[in-house]
Image (cartoon, rainbow, N blue to C red; front, side, top):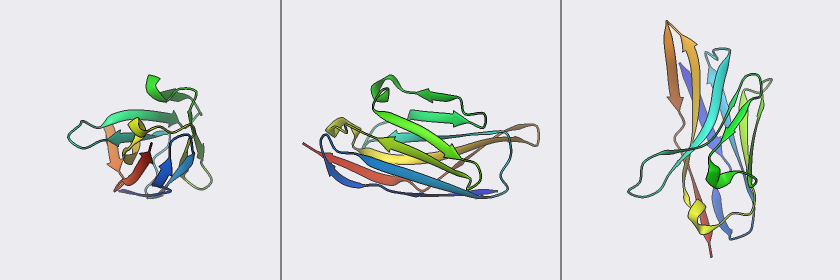
Length: 119
């Protein structure tokens, strides 16, 4: 099992920045992919960004050039630097860990952290 603890959410004004962190503990499969997803009220959970063990990153079009995902494998932690935030970025942000074991991909989710951007 993998446990994920997110931090860094909060309330900011449009144009400001936030940095989210997600620390993984437990059985850390490697290689793996860690990432961030977000879900607004009444909406589906959507990809924000992912980063693989080798450092390859993938972003949703809506956050490209504003958000940067990074990871520190020594700390089993993934970060999401969010710049130029706008009200449309308001959501609960969830961290996900995906690792290969027992012949399949295994997904683990954090509890979510609220990001609210006021106009």
